[in-house]
Image (cartoon, rainbow, N blue to C red; front, side, top):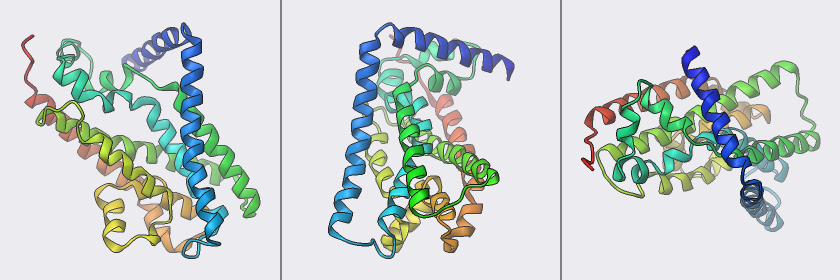
Length: 263
């Protein structure tokens, strides 16, 4: 554990040196990321300019859902860059050979070789939106609520990591530069809205197959005092642990199946 923490510190320090050497590029990346967040937020504003409520959910509640969803997603996005490009960079171009030559866990190397620091703006934006909606909805936050929120945010990030790690691992068998990550990434949007607005199939999909609802909707519903979803809220750490364990098993099997490019 100490060895990996030291390596993580070294990886991040090296990343900062590279990014800060091109400060203009970092500023542009942050602004671009923030613009994408604002555009997604604009859709919520446009939606509620046409309707007063969304199947019993008010504007402030849906805005709270959106803001809270940014917290685990932002943390996940900080370390997810290599998962998106894994098939292209590591499999097709043979970069994974170098990973296997090192006496360090292969998954650890892939995740922490690159960071996306600009995604921290999503966390900051999410906190600002949650704070604003909490005032509008008269939601009180006790110390234990903040601790609980921090815990489920980390669990939500782990769920995102588990889902996309499983999809990334498919590249070991299905060699493709694009992979399965981009189309599934689009489903993240569904988790930003009340799951009750969808039909039964979509609710089941987002809960038990691609459990994005456990990363954003169910914790948000708990803090919005929507007691109908309390059972799902208490299952969040179970779902996070189970899916992450399964994803690491798939990854290990994929590593065993990996064949060098020979180049």
